[in-house]
Each structure stands twice: as C-alpha cells, then as structure tokens.
Image (spheres, rainbow, N blue to C red):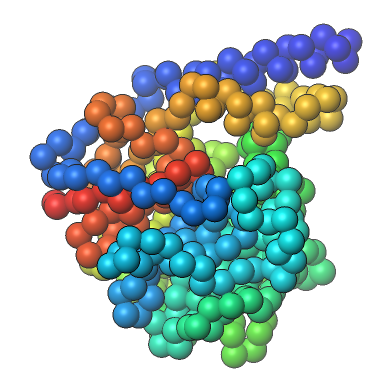
Length: 371
C-alpha cells in the first residue's frame, strides 16, 4: 500500500509541477509593451545564484543583495562589478564557488530579506538559518539579534521591513518544521507553523503578531505605518494586518494571486510590488488543498521533493510575474512575462529611481521601467 501511495503521490506532484508552468487559465493579465524600454541581465560572481531581495543604502548606492553562498554583495554601477559587503556566518570554508550551495547554506548562511535603517545606516538581514541579524554601514560579519521567540527557534527566517520612525523590524518566519532548502515541503504539506513577528531594537524584544500561518513570506509596511501587507506563499493570498487606527489587530484578506507570491516591496510613492515566483496550476491547487498527499510523499519518498521540483523546473522553465498594488493593497497592474522576455522564478520586484530590479531564485536582471 505504501509503494502504491508513493507512486501516486510522485505522479501527482510531477504533473502538478508541469502544470504550474503551462496553466494560463487562472487570470487575465496585461502585458506592458512600450513602458518596458530595456532589459539588462547582470551576472553574479563566483558561482553564486539566487539574489532573493534588493535594497539601496541612504546614499542611493546599490543594490545590495544576498546570494546562495551566504554573502551580501553590492553592485557598483560605475564600475560594472559586484563587491563583497557582508556575511551572515563566520564559517566560510568551502562556501563560495560553483557547487550546490543548498547543501551548505545551513553553515554558510542564506540571506533573504534585506533593509537599511535610514537613520542609522545599519543593514538588517533575515537569514533563513541564522535568524534576524544586523551589520553596520561598513559591512563585515553581521551580528545576530534574534533567533527564537517564546522558546521556539526560527526555522526559516524570510522577509523583513523597518519602521524608520521607531526602528521596529517586522519579519516573517516561514516554517518551524522545514528549513529553506525544503521549501517545497512547506507548500505541499500544508505546514502552518509560520509566524509574523516584530523586533524592537531598544528593548531587544521579539513579539509574535500572528502565528499558524502557511508559508508567510514577503512583508511590507505601509507608507503611513498604519498596516502591514504580507503574503502566504502556500495559499497565494495577500493579507493586510492593521497596526494602528481603530482596526489595529485586525487581519484582512486583500487579494488572491494566480501564482506563488514571494516578496512584497513598497516604492517611493507608497505603492507595492509583489513578485510571483511561478503560476499555480489547477492540479497543484488541488494538491495543496489535500495536504495528506504531500505529507505521505514527504514521509516515504527516498528523494527530496524540493530537488524533484528544481530539476523539473529547470527543464520546463517558470513564468514569473510582477504585480503592482496601490497604497491600500489593491491590484492595479500586472507585468506578465508570458510574451516576449521571460522572467523566471521571480522573487522580488524592487522599483528604484525609474528602474525595476527583478530578483530570481536562479538569476536576476534590471528592467527599465517608465510608467
């Protein structure tokens, strides 16, 4: 019986992964033509991949991004090169170079969310394995700030944003059951151990705002600080969590996306961009709604389901998207890569100085935008 269930589960997951990239029936999207003027692909150094998130410092330098070997690197446009800025782990032997970094990321670190504090110039980092960290304006080895709350360690620290008036850091822990390198297991198992939290630098206290979340991922604070937007990757939903006004403490579902959302970033005028990693086909939607199948597969499969997904995804390719929201979190525009240049496995869309910087699990590029 176990062998039969395993075969069925493997078949369902494989087919679902295929349909992620070919099912177009979920949403009608608009493709911007004239507004996208130029596409530039920028390579990463020393065999690194996966620039998850971007940020710019107070001088407008950057972007800075975290990559698969645990480094945070800075782009120097006038020199057309990357330079090392910081690391999240002191253990660096064997971290760099062209190899499978997922096997060493628990040692070398895997920096995901990044954000500079505009007042102090310090860079705050959400590292999937090392927790919440900070490094000074000159870079170097980041120092840990929080690695657990209420006696339960962070398992998959993911994204963050900062209230520049108070210094409070809001961040997500995507799962306490699965680490980052098993992110597909988080989705197909229906894992709901994720948490939305805040860290107060003055008291060094970490507080849980919401728990029992299904793969909470990107988080962004509204321009007036009244609410947070965050996504659940598993459910493909966007939430609004009120911090102020008479609605403080209330949670609202704002949008249902056609694919798996990753990071949420606010632009200079208070709008938001959501990066959509890949489409969610109808079969995969059914699989997610029946997590017993995924849990059976995780328990009895002799291979890592995330590796199965990665191999199939590289063969088939993944169509990513960028979705722009207004200041209240309502969808106003969709950048769809199904025509023309293809965005693959989009992790983030960062709008800065007239350009869109588009992150990817496997690569990234700058997309000039004039809207």
